[in-house]
Amino acid sequence: MSFSRTFPNEPASAAAVRRFVREIVERAPCRVEVDRAVLLASELVANAALHANSEEVRVHVAVAADGVRIAVTDEDPQPFSPRRAAPDDTSGRGMQLVDRLSDGWGMDYFQRSQKSVWFHLRSPAGGVSDPAGPD
Image 1 (spheres, rainbow, N blue to C red):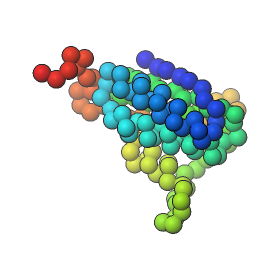
Image 2 (cartoon, one colour):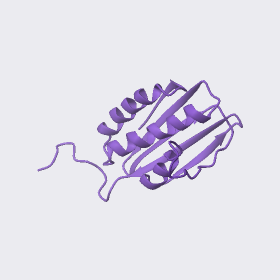
Image 3 (cartoon, rainbow, N blue to C red):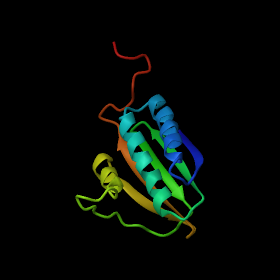
Image 4 (tube, one colour):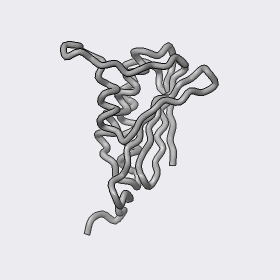
């Protein structure tokens, strides 16, 4: 299953993205930490709002038995490289969170006019939840 929605590329969209991701991941048949998925999606959208010259971003959530993959695509093809924030910096730690809390992340480039930053969260062993609930 996959779901996509477009949002204005502005900081205020982060709350709408969090609701969108939460709704999908909570109903997903795989077991991943919902709060972790929401946090990391919010970080990717915040990065796009701060750094991408794009009027909108597209959030894509792909759900599979082994986990979820969440991507944020913008219309700014400029690559970025995560930076290391100094201890007294008030920002610059978003991709460090994505790196540490996800099971993998990366960037894809499309038609030389877009980039997509994504992360993957794997389900633990046995990954599919029981729709009937615990015994």
